[in-house]
Length: 71
Image (cartoon, rainbow, N blue to C red; front, side):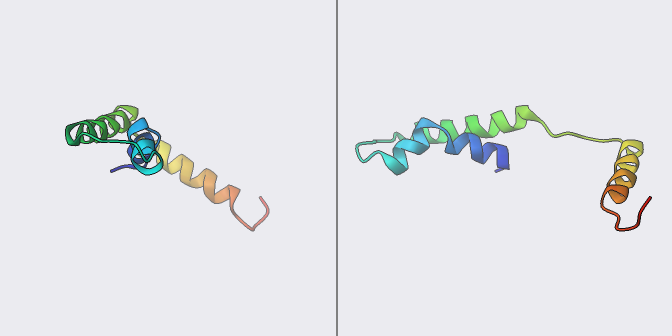
């Protein structure tokens, strides 16, 4: 599970109920559906991607930002 999926899942009412509400009763199908929903939400959020030129430019920029040598 991705970080986004974990955060979405842990912020759900089902998660709160399971761990913090002593009267909570969870239906197994409901728990599986909530987990699948959290994974789908994370997948929908997507990941940022860079092409090779953007990645190289970012690498140079980061090297300059963290360099101990004055520019």
